[in-house]
Image 1 (spheres, rainbow, N blue to C red):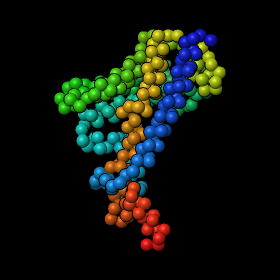
Image 2 (cartoon, protein in one colour):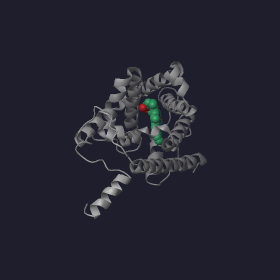
Image 3 (cartoon, rainbow, N blue to C red):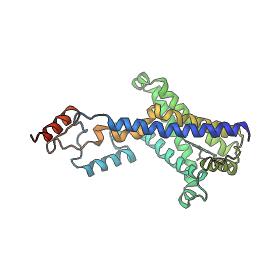
Image 4 (tube, helix red, strand yellow):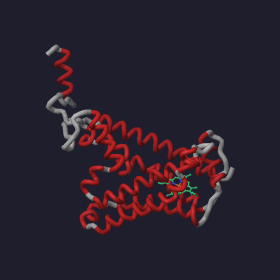
Length: 249
Ligand code: HEM
């Protein structure tokens, strides 16, 4: 077995473990973090169903971003929708046979590669062109954008400039899933694309990209606006409530 195959196999096992373990751990910490006060961003829903609908509008059409800034919304939303299409298109490398709906979206997925780049370009330009955004931009903001741009560019390079052996690549990933390693094609564009993806998976739980699971834990979005109907108990007040309940008071 070539050393390169062994290296990438170990890299992807490690990256997957760190991604799953890291996001799981961070979500567990978020879930346990107290929400001492009722702070839903008003106007806020007064029922749990309403909160679910609000969250749905946030994560599908980025509703509050749309209200606050149309340019960031345009580029940010375009990037995320394109990313979703690209990721769904990639499912063909991990299932045999390829699911019918994954085969169906293949042509859209390829335009999504360019959509992703356009969205990222807009978001990155803003960090240079808007003074107050440039002022608060840290190296990690630029690095995450650079990483995503490089992943998209190396992916598109494989599509249009230097093809790789997709059948062999698929055999490699299906092999990883069942612990039967197959040789990985040693094309530079592919090796770069995969190395960058592994880096993305590893830094994900340590980076700002955690906003993806984090949005669901945001108290301004996930709280029901019902402090007049229900007592909001958290931290010491919840403990007092339990004690009072135990004493029958
Ligand atoms: C282990 C995971 C991945 C594998 C095996 C993989 C493999 C590939 C391959 C073989 C291509 C060329 C497609 C073709 O020639 O038709 C490609 C394209 C591409 N990849 Fe990946 N990739 C992975 C993860 C990712 C991730 C996480 C992203 C985004 C963050 C990404 C973004 C892209 C883009 C934008 C393209 C060009 C558009 C397209 O073909 O859909 N890839 N990838």
